[in-house]
Length: 151
Image 1 (tube, rainbow, N blue to C red):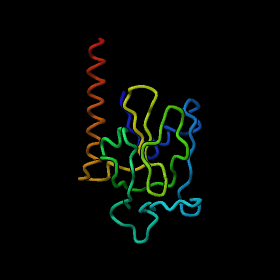
Image 2: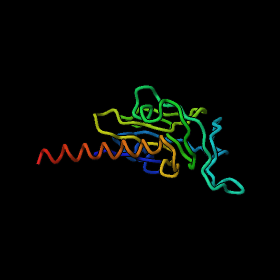
Image 3: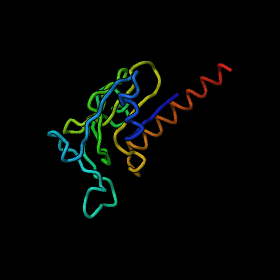
Image 4: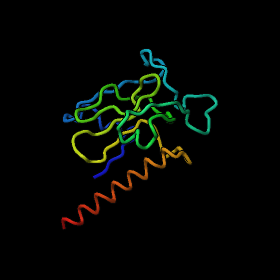
């Protein structure tokens, strides 16, 4: 079953409570960044902008996210936490220029599992965000077709 997790659901891909994956996270708020200079969520800005702040990100060659984005792109920020170490079976496939993890992908099998730290559903008209959703839907259709053949 294809899975795309973002921000809070994405955190489920690496929370220590999920013993099988055993990942951990960091706090990205200004007072807790430990040297990270990550974009600030819009709700922390005065006045609050209409759009989320955006910043550059790089995507690991050969990853699903690199195939979607072309290897480099822009993502939005609206979070106070990020992955510090991915859980077992996950690999980091996207990072902001400051090193903050922006995406992870499942390596355990051929299932389509992508976790992103940004909000592509709030990036209207962005080609990479639209391709991410298109790939998710295509993976779902492929899985559905495969399951229907087994019945």
